[in-house]
Each structure stands twice: as structure tokens, then as C-alpha cells.
Length: 272
Image (tube, rainbow, N blue to C red; front, top):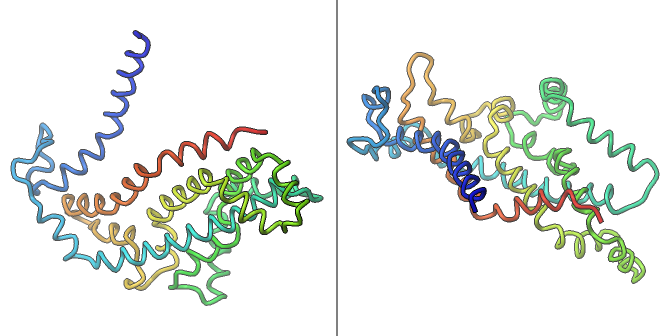
């Protein structure tokens, strides 16, 4: 009992430490300008300024950015889940020559930093005429998605009993039907994990839209937040309010789907 109590105390302290930046952001978003940098810091504003949130919608086209971000994120999640799971099925459930070597090559791509491939990929999309469109941000997701997603799903697929797949093959079920009707329903935790990670990365992505989108009407929430940072002066209460509005979907998504997120990671390391 004593060890559990100590463990709970340590976890509670860590939870407080990790949640403090979020609470400070919430506090700052409700402050007047003169209260932000006061010493000692004021956690609870004397006067709550709700108008900071209203000003977010006045200084930038928030709903346009929200629509663009939601569209890009939704298409990226759809492409990553479908194509990533299909590629992972080939690596984890099928036997073919050169499979392991090609899988190692896929994993090796994770060691390449984005700065190495940024210019060649930009030139490719420029030659295709895709600049200032959402295609460079969404189409690649339909061709396998991220290598880590393939790795995660492949590890999960290897936990599925091969006898189940062999029984379906004996009954004459084609591979695409096995993948869709048998493997996909069993892999819901792993698929949910891929969807959540893809959502978090795409929703917060700043560099991709900055490189490929030049029209403000095509902008995303990340670009909108960057536009609130001034060269000489920044309205911190406005910036914190906009940041909180942008973070809200991620927080809600994680709280509602954290069970699948944790289950997907834990079961991906179990082998048959």
C-alpha cells in the first residue's frame, strides 16, 4: 500500500507539471495585456476578458482556416489508414520473395530527415503543377503514408493467427477480401492509433502548408497562428486564445479515443 501511495504521489506531481503549460495558456488567453507579464505571475485574472476569443474571429478568417485544415486532415487520415493498412498487410500477412529486404528499405526511409528530401519533393510537385493546392499535402498519404504507420500496422497484423487467414484462403476468399473483411475489423485499435497520430501531425503541421500554399484562402490554422506573431510586438492574449481553439479538437480526440491509442501500441509488440 505504501509503494502504491508513493507511486500515485509521483504520478500526480508529474501530471501537474505536464498540465501547467496548458493552464498557463488558458489563463493568459483570459487576461488583459497589462496582467500578462506581471511579477509574481497571476494565474487567475482579476478581470476575465472573454473578448480575446471574439477577436480571434475578427483578425483572421478562422472558419476558412478551420475548413481547410479539416479537409486536409480528413483526406490525410483516410489515405494513411487505407493505403498504410494495405501495404502492412502485404508485409505482415503474405509470403513473397524479397519481402523482408523491402520492409527494411521502408524502415530505412525513417532515418532520412525531411530537410534532405524537401527540395527534390518540392521540385516534383512544382513540375506536376500542384503548388498552391492541397494535393502535395494529401495525395502522398494514399500511397502508403508514413513508414512508421506501416511498421505499426505490420506488427499488429503479425499477432493475427495465420490459421484464420489460411482458413479464409482455403474457402476461396481473395486476399483483398481477407484484408477488408477479416484483418481490418481485427485491427481497429492499431488503425485508431494511426488515425490519431496522423490527425495530430497533420492538424499541427506548419512547414508543409507554408511550403506549398501561398494563397491565404488556402491557408490552415497553423499558418493563421503564425500570422498573429508580430515582428516587433505580439498580442499574447490573442495568440493564446487562438492556440487554445486550435488545440481543443486534439484534446477532445485524445480523451475519447485514448483507450484505442494505448491498446494499439501495446498489442503491436505482441507476437503470435
